[in-house]
Amino acid sequence: MIEIIEGVTLFPELQTILAVDSSSIFDEEGMTPVEIGSNKIAPWGTNNNMPGEILNKVKKSDVISANLRFNRDVCYGLSPKLVKVIRDTNGKIVDHVEVEDGPEYDFFEMNDFPLFYLEQITDMVYFHNAFAELIPSASTKTIASVRHKEAAFSRWSVMNNKGKITKHYYSGKWPDSPGASDIVVSKAIDEFNAVGDITAMMAMKKERMVYPVYMPSPGRPYYSLPEWYSIFQSGWYDHSIAIPELKKAIMKNNLGVKFIIYISQKYFDDIFQKEGIDRSDFKAIKKRVDEEKTKFNDFLTGSVNANKSILALKDYVMSGSSALENKWIEIEPIDNKFEGGEYITDIETAANIMCYAMGVHPNLIGATPGKSSGSLSGTDKRELFLMKQALMKPIIDRSLRVVKIIKKINNWDKDITVVVPEYIFTTLDKAKSGKTESNNNKA
Image (cartoon, rainbow, N blue to C red; front, side, top):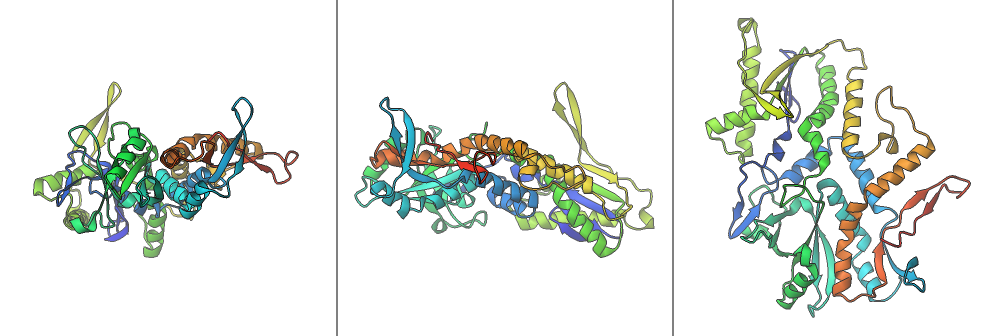
């Protein structure tokens, strides 16, 4: 039994692959609060470590990593700049100039706002959740500092009886059961009354306040769920990372593969429930899964087991006016003629589907694998890039929302703000470099 990659095991003597889907981290059914001391924490994911699970998955996929970098860089543009807008006689904004002195400039520079913004949009692109800590001045009348709080280490408190989240918890030890002393507790700012809420907190000498930045997700009151996570739940992620590891293992062990056994997570959930295994006990779960893999190997190996059958459950999932069959165990024979170019079509399909889910056209970040990966014209790529910039505006807008709050509390000049200029690619007859800079003075 050879562990190729997480969830994919090779049985050399059987010439068989055993694959377990990885979508269980999104199953929040029956989730209960995590209680640490007097703190009641809303868990993020089944084992309170969904951000960590996502990061582990991202680093195994070159396609996802490249797409996330591209989406983040599009949001960053030419980096945020502190500007003062210029208005005409009717009050309409016509231009802007960069601000290089004054209290607003001091705040922008002392807090390295471009780095803060880059950290915020990175978490927004990865998780659709970001957390900004606002630190009051000694007089508690203004905001002195703004700091990024890592989403991977952030959790919200359980809502109170009024449906409001009141606390933010920060720890680097999720999900390893941190003690109360390992958690930094801050007040959660009400995003719908941020200025009033912050003013009241500063009057009460509250030193730690965290503002929530997020993209809305229907039916998720605590942590948003990016739409592109569908690649994990649909199985395309598992498929894409298994192929290169599978080929490497086959070449290393000098053998072919005749079958792939797919096992639904429901199969193991049923075992855990019947045997009373706690889903939060990761060591016990891994041990039990390994035992079940060994049982499959023992059952299917050898001539004495020839002609034996496996009894497997299945259920049905409603889809429109019909029902789809969902098998708990499925054995699929595969073509075992290896000539060097196997699975190229599978890799290309998986890459294109993941790019589609993440809203990135493959030609904007590089060639897609496979024979059909053609190249678009410069005009097509330019228009695609402009469309991408426009589609990332919601993330940019939500990430800059905290600036308007600080501006109001610190009583900044009404014409001073932070904007994110962007490149506008054009033709060489209009600009020698092929690009110009947007004013973006209405941001």
